[in-house]
Image (cartoon, rainbow, N blue to C red; front, side, top):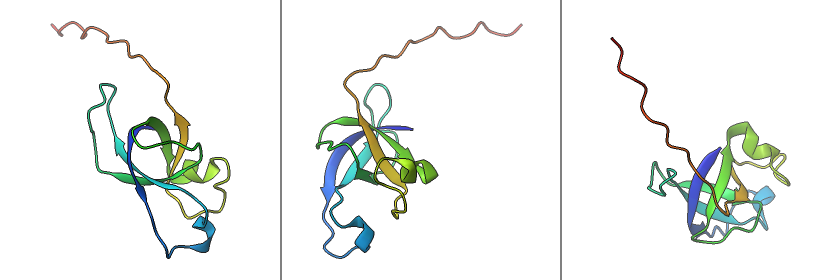
Length: 97
């Protein structure tokens, strides 16, 4: 799973017919502190996410398991909108002797 921020949309007038009627969103993967961590990704939106929202996305074969994505030519699908989350920051392990 990928934690990401929706940063834009994609409009494609010519595309695979199986993508007709599907929203394509541009994602920026982020870390728990909301800092960018990688390259932009285009994903099919299955949950009606909006620009600026933090989302959970899946990639690879999992992207084609998302609701309504079976047999679609996709490598990334948005499967959730993040309302909130928390991270427990553990202290570093003691130094080896």
